[in-house]
Image (cartoon, rainbow, N blue to C red):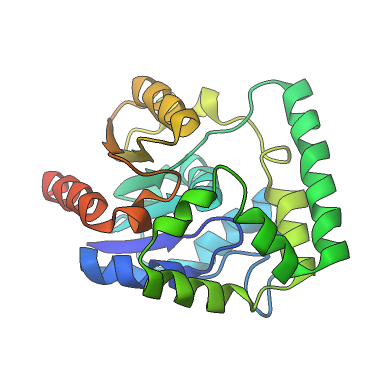
Length: 244
């Protein structure tokens, strides 16, 4: 299986390294716009779709995998270029906020967080971000994997993370729910059992997507592929076998 994998907010492409080794296959794991030591500072949905387009050069034979922010980016590309992928794997995904008023409210929250990043710096913000209820479950990740992730994340810039929040946060992205029914490629939805919000979203997405399978990973939260890597890898292996 050939996979292009997109990480979450404050993450790095390198976060996938141990999981990719467990899954096997050929993986490409770029840093998304706004992330890494020399980030691309145009993080808009259009620029992100262009970035993904430029990163992959093997259309129709590659599976696109996205986690959280990366899942949002993956969906943006997939609904624009569904012919480009043989399948999608979406981990802790959301197709967007459905009402304009809720998007505006979320954009205001994201703006305050972006200002906090610029004021306190990337390192202080990441420490805060990892203490939030949704992200806190990452503390259960294997200690050596977690240590490597933390070391790699220290390369982020405040400008890059703040720009990512402002331009690719949920308040800045369009509502993709109405477009899901036209996405006819096979989709594997993965969520952690303890991540109640994203389990509910995945359950609903499964009813809308024409070819979707939903797998819940027991006893983990928002980052199931690293919190419970063996179980998540088994789900991906089963999905890959079904693709043929």
